[in-house]
Every structure is written in C-alpha cells, then in structure tokens.
Length: 215
Image 1: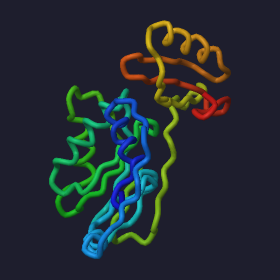
Image 2 (image 1 turned 90 degrees about the vertical axis):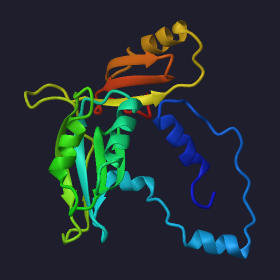
Image 3 (image 1 turned 180 degrees about the vertical axis):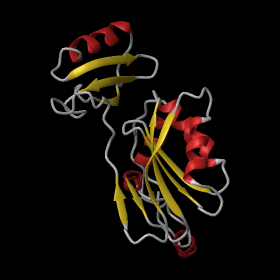
Image 4 (image 1 turned 90 degrees about the horizontal axis):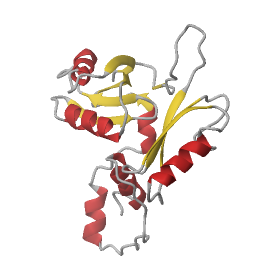
C-alpha cells in the first residue's frame, strides 16, 4: 500500500475490460525500520496526472500522440503492451476517452516518427496516428498540455466527444435496452451502445449540451 493504492489496482483491472470495485478497504501496515528504508529506495510510479501533460525529463523525452480508431480498452492495452516492448520506450499511457497516448522514451534509441509508425503497424492496422506534442530534455518550456480531441470536421458539423462509462448491475438484454432507451433521449446524446458482456456504455455526445458526469 505504500507503493500502490487499492484504487489504482481497481483502475488497472478495469483498464483491461473487467468491471471492478473495492469490496474491503485495506488495513494500514506497521512497518519496521528495514521496510521503511527499503520503501525509501523504491522508485514510485508517476501519478495519473502525468497522462494529461507532456513534461521535461532529465532522463529522456515525452511525446503525445492523437490516435483515431480505438474502440475499447482492449485497443489501449494492445497499444501499451506493443510499445512497451520497443527499445528506448520507458513508459506508455494510453487514454481511450481523450484518444491519446503519452510515451516517455530515450531520444537516442527511438524517434517520435518511429513510435507513430509502430502504433499504425499494430494489427489490424486500423489506427491513424498524429503527433500532438513533443518535449525534449533540452527544451526550455517546462510543460505542454493537450486537450481532449473532439470528433467532427471543419465543415461546420457539430463537434462530438465519446466517453465510456462502466455500468454495474446489468443482468440481461432488457437492462441494456432500458439504459439505451433512456439515455438516447437525453439532450446532447448522439449515439449510445451498451455492452452487457463488458458492463460498459459507449456514448457519443455534444460537450456543449451535456457531460460524462451528467450521463
């Protein structure tokens, strides 16, 4: 618990497509002197906020990619596991909701263009990738933030965004039809697809009229 929280474990389980909840909160451990020293020398993973920014690192560079073509958590897991095996890649964080990937890498071993091509080459070759931002350890600007990419075009069509909501408690197709029927009538909702097997609802909506929290 001093290295990873129960909430982080729950999020990792849901990231691979399984609904999860914390049934019992963990108890705090009483640590001895040896354990405390061991934990002090253990590197801690970056926080969730690191997925939302591109920042400088003395050990390498960070690139943010916009990825079109992801449909589920299996897509994000597939991309993360594939990139993690490449030489020079230190960490990968893929977000389905913002359609992005933040990759920390060693610029001496791999380039952003090579990373982009590697993502597009992942079977079945459905991903369209563009470089949103890049930060090198030699840059002066400390932080480059990126926004969630809206869906739409420059022809005046309304912009839409897509969110995935985990739904616990569904037991049959009637539950699916009931949820789809109610939510599809909500203001701002363009499309909804509920999966009983995955326990999720994929909703395309107008961010000017509603939000994931409201839905």
